[in-house]
Image 1: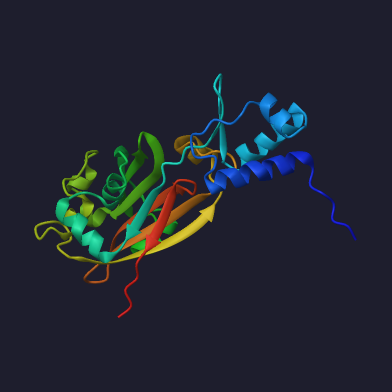
Image 2: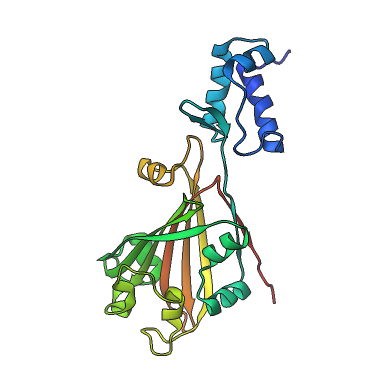
Length: 256
């Protein structure tokens, strides 16, 4: 039984995809025009257009009106999470995201979108170990690298602990929230001893697609990160939405 051959547009798409993934067509590279690709592959412009549309849907190409089609630029941030680097960054007051991006020659920026007190959503309440709809302070932020949106991060904190603190101000906290948590004169007065992360991969919502400029076909990683303190209590839950085409994660787990 013979295997049916791929349609011409799929062959062209597979060829260009291989060149992109191998780096022969690097991020930011402009593709040949539709006419040039038509001649190169001895086909029609309609077939070439279908191949390019498929690669755009895969998040590999972008069109710029009046300029052409380009391999999608990807300012990829490699995030390294260890207890040691958390402590080192904690001393400097620089967040792990900012430090990792800067170390890779990128320009990081964090913007506070809003700060408000709300009833805890069920998925947050369960992780904080509080009653559903108990009051929490939520700090909503957007992270950028080289002015491109990289992730949305909502931080949730029990209002019972953090009401009346700098967490309620829509401004950056000197040294970050971790410094406030560990401050001997702060609301918690305990050392952070553990982070627990849960990762879920799904397709983005329309609002996430717009806010993060996610191209068609690119999934989104949703990461819940719970910070535990000495007594075992969870005092912070970060809900991060991260496009999968612009991040890499590496975890170092020390086994005693």
